[in-house]
Image (tube, rainbow, N blue to C red):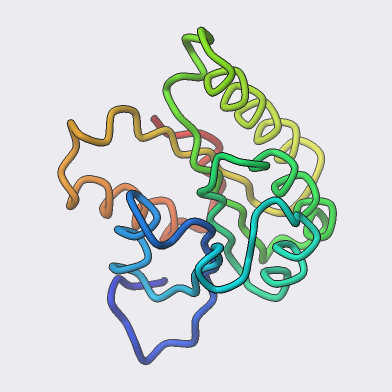
Length: 157
């Protein structure tokens, strides 16, 4: 089981978008490595991101830009490995497709279901909803719950 703030444990978690918002909160409270433009990992270069995170055990797919494409490409490498986990940060907006953002999150949710049905890698989609209505502890506890389970939590809202 992974624990929060265990700095002596080998890092097994990679996250995109770790310098602000939700990504920063998770990065600051879990033992993980971050990947963003600030350390020369631009999510528009999908191959570069996938190559950088492929040796981790867990990948938290937190950046909206190219999120589906990154998930699909990494899953294609990991799909036969039951020790790997992809956690997509989705949104409740997937249920109310009124924008391109909601449409992309709906596609991400559908991919999560497809990936679990067709592979051994665990894939989850965490839909936090309105982050400003949740405390930091609620956000952290939700991610800890997902990370600390050995079974697939396909989607949690």
